[in-house]
Amino acid sequence: SIEIAPDCLWWPELLDRPAQEALVEEVRGLLREAPLFAPAMPRTGKPLSVKMSNCGPLGWVADVSGYRYQPFHPDTRAPWPPIPRSLLDLWDQLTRHPAPPEACLINWYAPDARMGLHQDRDETDLSAPVLSLSLGDTALFRIGGENRSGSTHSVRLTSGDAVLLAGRSRLAFHGVDRILPGTSTLLGAPGRINLTLRRVTPPD
Ligand code: MD3
Ligand code: FE
Image (tube, rainbow, N blue to C red):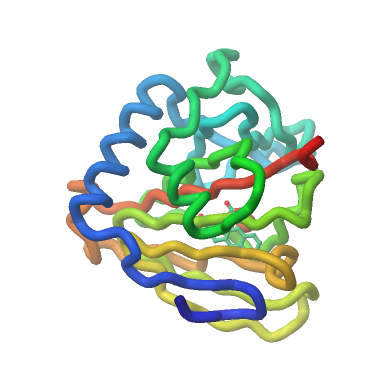
């Protein structure tokens, strides 16, 4: 792996094409059970451009009342489906963290979607790592430090890449500036899927 920021490790094309195809099929199955929802900004209700779903005991949601983790889908009210075994195995292999992930956020980027620079701090256990997997079109990903005003640098995240955010990178500002449509044939349509596996609560 390559360290793209302090304690932020990147494995370019960790997953080969058959593994990526198998993971896309898993995600399509998850999305039949837990369809994409449209997250919105707190207070304003302005929709984010990224569409989302989750699997695992907890899922991240965003609406006019705020950002939070909850055990059910915001539209269907059904519990989130379980995290597939293949993802739990990747978490164990790459993080070596002693507790399993509780949430897997599924982000869907249409070709014109983006994600502004932000910190992930809705998790109660900020000492646990976050693992990200990219599928489909390449994303121009930006990462900085713990201050919004600090310097940043960009990495092209391509299909099959894994990124592990741990230690000093866990509270780094980061975002997706744009998707490069037509850079992958994996999904059979332009766009990108990003999966993030997280711990939310401290293990007891
Ligand atoms: C750096 N997702 O879901 S993944 C997110 O490509 C998110 O969908 C982006 O930012 C995406 O919150 C980036 C890489 C990533 C994920 C979590 C991080 C980078 C991170 C947490 C802390 C620092
Ligand atoms: Fe994030």
